[in-house]
Image (cartoon, rainbow, N blue to C red; front, side, top):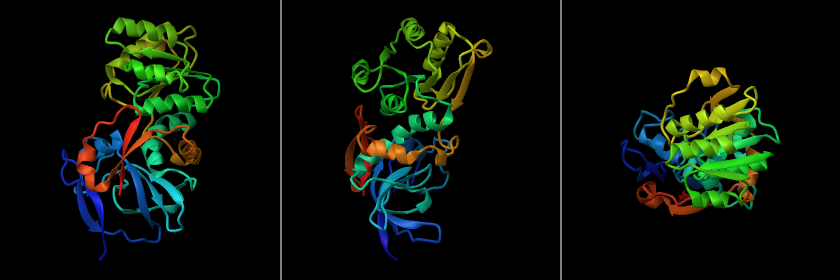
Length: 317
């Protein structure tokens, strides 16, 4: 039997190991594709650690939630989904779910960019009734996904985009990348609340990559300063780097047209998310993140690398 190489999670809490495994075999629903590039995203590590809600309880397993592949006909495609196990030389794919990529697309750039870009793209295309001209606050805009969210909101027609985050240098850069205004989230809660109340109180959509106590503070500040409390505010929880839970004041819900939702695996019909349009925007460089290519043989060292802002580690089998 033919073997291929892959990354294999053999124990939770450890990096994947470079291993030899049996080669995948095509069946009536799946074809074999050559893997060209796989992004090491925060959610990839979280699922592999066993801490994510999409984690598998069965060991060992191949990590990886997405990939750029070359199909048997030579065409490029992006494939993905929670638990798809893409960190291998070859994988099985569902041809109907493969997203075609332009022939000139750089596999590493697409692998680095599609997952972070999806969070905001899918939210604005399918999770909330967003329309061109509305205003968007990106809470946690200085991370990779948040930075791309600023660009995606602008690309999808936002009338005003506000970027809020802790990295002041990155915030200044975002003014040249689609943000109309920036808000520095400082350790001084009163200062942060005042800035949010002054500059973001009238937004239509909040893309929240933080959650936890910082989001509680932001929500109180924004709701308390809204002029028209009947104006719908869609607050979408996407990331949880500030903590997994919030305490919500019921009075804020009763006195405002506030709608809280989440966007992630399981909450969105991906077939309605216009992902080929997103792939084209990524391939063109409009929504791209800089890849840091690393060979699959170095998966253990790559797993613990902390990416710089605007960078994503990408494994090349």
